[in-house]
Image (tube, one colour):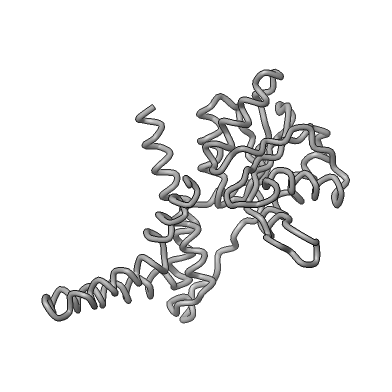
Length: 250
């Protein structure tokens, strides 16, 4: 149930539902408190408009993203690749497989493995009811499609903090504490903080870098892609803040 509660909270505080709920509250108050009601409706619509513009999406993404290519991986002892959800009931594959984002992480992880020869750990549990975890789907794709072996499968985690904690539980007893961490650029900063907190020395290996668009008139017109980018950027920024607070609380 933890994953469900987390998913519900995310829906409530991130766009587009945050703006819709604000406007709906204004509509409910319109008869009794007309001035407040109109202000909330206007505020909800304005919030959706602003967060849906490419101009705002680009700037939030620039704040959230890790924008450096892989450095020297020589000190590392292993590669850890983080999952990114499942493509559920894929008819062309006969069942669940990795998501599009997850596939891009695996592709880059395979590239790093071929360049370094380092063993791989894949990390991702069951965030939703499914016959298998993300990690087992990740291993299947790496071994069957990329011809890359997977040494460790961490299949219990449901969030980034657990990715780090359960990976440490698997790797630390083997003497592995220096890793190349593979995830997407917009997820990297939070991931590095989580993995360093449990004891790893992390060499970031980010993929899917967002290119900055030129500012023009279209930058101030909302689009679904911009709203989606804003949602992901806010998710990372809020998640980074939350993980920082948890670290302070111990």
